[in-house]
Amino acid sequence: MSDIFTEITEATGVDNSVLGKVYAGRRLVPILGEITPEMADGAARALMALDVVKIAPITLLIGSDGGCLKSSNDIGGIIQTLRSPVDGLVIGRAGSSAFDLLLKCRVRMALPNAMLFTHFCRHNIEAIIEGDISKKDLAELKRRLLHDRHDFEELYMKRLGMTRKQVYEICRLGEKFSMTYDARGALKHRMIDKIVKNFKLFGDCETD
Image (cartoon, rainbow, N blue to C red; front, top):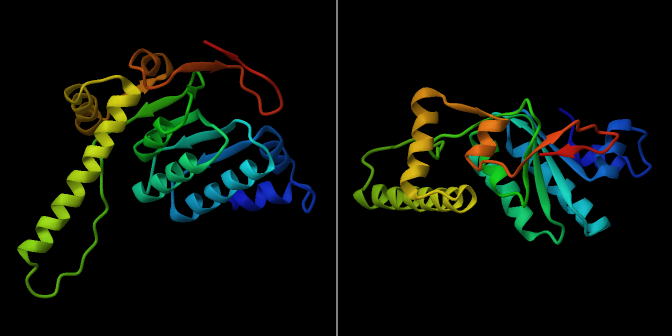
């Protein structure tokens, strides 16, 4: 996938990319495929560039099964700093950290064929331990993981209108049974705010 920032900035006149011009003109930032540090960097710069041009809604086009949790959090952090509100539209799948990112958007939307998936907060921990790791180090690691889990649960409770126990159950279903939700199911469980019909890159759309 090409760099998002390049696509959007070149659409101002340096490049004749049709897709880039559509993204820039309609204030769309694609989150497609695996969420990586490189994607997060491009998406963050694209969001900031659009915010500089004008204070107006920006839409993330989400089609991702997730990826790096830190990278997703980095995009979510940028969203919180912008003057422009950022909405999310699931155009394919939104799973794992991509679903977390959707929850950080102002309005959560999905196409009728969208699928959504969530599970317990995951951490990619890679460590080379030479000798014995101290109890202090283990205690600090546990503290950080519990802090992240608390933030994860608080976000879900707030955006899904669920109790902590209900959040645990919906994540357990995803973890153990790979439970996915179609757009109607996601709307019922308050994972999204509305279903968008007939979305076109070059036109308007209808909603439920």
